[in-house]
Amino acid sequence: MRLLVLGGSASGKSEYAEYCALSLGKPLIYIATMIPYGSDAEARIARHRTLRAEKGFDTFECYRRVSSAPVPQNTTVLLECLTNLAANEMFGGAGADSEAAIGRDIESLARACANLIVVSGNVFDAGTDHDGDTLRYMRCLAGLNRRLSARFDAVVEVVCGIPVILKAQESLPDLLRRG
Image (tube, rainbow, N blue to C red; front, side):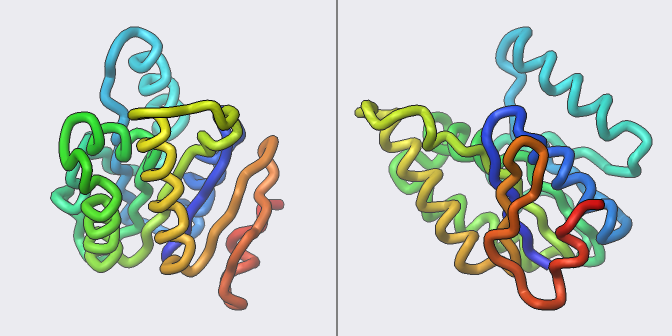
């Protein structure tokens, strides 16, 4: 299964994505993309590590080129998150070709594993008065979200901790709904 989980900051999207990954079964791989720049980022990373402790994930820090992560075929992979990955690639990796490069990389990762869950933040509610690098970043992320939405089996937006199914194959909704 291929699942895209969208949501705003602190919406519960990470918790929901972990729930789905655990429901799909082991072995579980967590690909972390947040570069630990400063104490705020380090605190968020520590919080996420604590929240998934004892859940059985093998964690790989992979800030760019996620297809290079060691992923056996029978695994469920949780990629956290596309928002950071896009920034990492745009400003320290693929540059102008970021959207296409990341898209190819994620599609390669999807072919390498049994299940792939990608978490992506909603940066589009921050107004429309952006230009330069910020606007290019937002357009890149929007393009990636559209690309994955078209190719993935399911798309769920998490709003205030509530999963809203935007797209799902008929065989998937029971997994996607949380009790």
